[in-house]
Amino acid sequence: RQKRAATHAAMLRRHRPAAASSRTATARHTSATTGRGDGDGPSSWSWYQPSLVDHMLYRIREVNDVPYDVRQSLVDFAVSGRVLGRVTPKVAERLSSSGPVFELSTGTNKPTLTLSNAAGTTVEQRTRSVASVMERFRDEGYITGWRDELYPVAESFDSPPTFLIERAAASLLGVLEYGVHINGLCEVNENETRMWMARRSKTKSKFPGFLDHIVAGGQPAGLSLMDNVVKECAEEAGIPPEITRRGIRPAGAISYETYEGALKNRGEGAMSRVVLFCFDLTLPGDFVPTAVDGEVESFFTWSLEEIGASMDPEYNNPIKPNCYLVIIDYLLRSGAISPDSPKYLEVLRTLRSGTCS
Image (cartoon, rainbow, N blue to C red; front, side, top):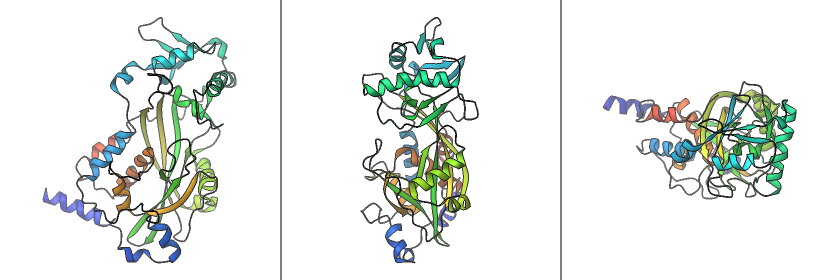
């Protein structure tokens, strides 16, 4: 046990942030990197806190929240025999009674929501048919946060799309949604790597004012992952494509499933089934991102200490919930958390609690 503790301490020591005095290499970087300009950052944090891994598990479970009774009651949404999503019985009833596009099969022990023949047989026909229903739900106020951004609906990431759906409506059908999240990294000196954080705009429809990754976005139809990363970096943080392409590194994926609760009536909550592709972006030490598209209020960097402190369930200035999974994945991959840590494998396993295909 002593040997394991020593190994743990040695691995973490390499990632311990340097003293505050070493963060003042340039005046410009000091104001941006402390993360304390608005009182966000804690004054101290020890990686040796035994509660850290428990706090990580709390953050992972926070976005893997599907009550047992809800999960047991879910209805498959299938097209041509391929299961594409999962919906609650009440959502299935609402969709099947919305017109000729959706129908609820009740000929077996387990009902199935599907598209009717009237919805068409091609990707284009199905896309138009589904859009007609979702646009009506939007106009009625049942679907909010409309984005005018189309997601592919398929069995898996590599499968051809069955149809396309408005991003804000994807969780209503419980289909797999994909996105890209970027860990923006900068080396202040040889001993310290800091992570760029963003403060979300207070006008965002979801999690206004929360902390966020430097860049993150949904994966729309018609773009490769890398093209989407380059686009999002330029649009959200003003990062030139040449800097992104030079510093980016694909780093795997995480997945989760969340029941979003009631939309309008009890039992009509949506199922978010999400796969996030993770990327590490090493930025030049003198580069400072700028808010471009109005989705971010400000940028600053945090040390690994400060990131660790934000895992605490009682932390009063948290990061957007799904970002924690990508950050925890980075901490494991980078060696900041030793594999000798208690519950290490549990953290590793639960980072992919959702369907990852």
